[in-house]
Image (cartoon, rainbow, N blue to C red):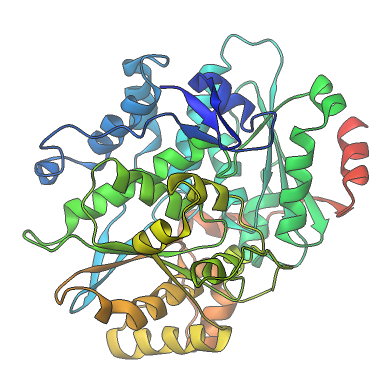
Length: 432
């Protein structure tokens, strides 16, 4: 498999270059030269498989033979070692719980896979690899966990000051070792801008071997397609192909689902559910694509004013908005509506939605009638409600219990360096 830049499809790169470089020099994003079709009968027989088997069959088609099949098998066995259960809420509404990994968020799947893949690719290098990652919350914690203690790799996490939950901040800033955290006085978009500028900084790249662990890295994105297929496996036998409802901020998770769909996975549609950061929603409604300043919301992991993976969506549909509109619907909701959905789901079905899944719940309620009766709606529950305990308690009057695996970090001391959003200040810190 070769990978090309969204800005120049004529230049292609091998998997190692795409993964370790993270961004092409023209500041596009890497995309697979072909989206591999799964073998005939794969989806018909998917109920006889388990998640690690599904993950291996997908990954080997993207990364082999450049990365040996037996290496991919070992990476999958080590990384994809937690469940992603589908829960039936009522009637044709389901959630896909993606919070059963070590940091209780959907990004565990991609971060763990990518960390092990990068470690193998970097195994013969004398110089360390430096991972730069911008986070609005869950990416940073998943990357910190996935890369902690990995030989030959240092991690620098940039997060927006005051715009992640207290538990998320503890997960970002208490690891030590090869994980360092930078608290940026600005928005997630500022953090993302700094990271992307760093990759284009020739002087910085002479000093460090840089790569990214954001969903701009194709090795983070592809593993997220695994759980879409696993959701299909878990739905009742004979179900109509589902609609996947994806709480969306940077749009990497949605892009992963569309990759799975292009590989042959049956689906009746995709819905992108956003908070007030609605640049893609406005584009799909017919407006010009116009990023705006990030708006802070209670679903903070989706507070992205200029989603980087939008260029991949454009690439998938040949920059044809009408084709994208046929495949994808999108809706935006306020904090007030989000809280109302959380209360409704809890009071009627005794199920606690985190504020991101609640946005997905609203989108499915609004758009369900557009699909064939009986079509399952699978709402991606992207993070454990405890990660947004303050919002949940304020909205529902109940305090989610912190799992034992996370209790120990609450008393750890925060270790983070406070910087402005000025790239020059970041550069001085890196070069100091």
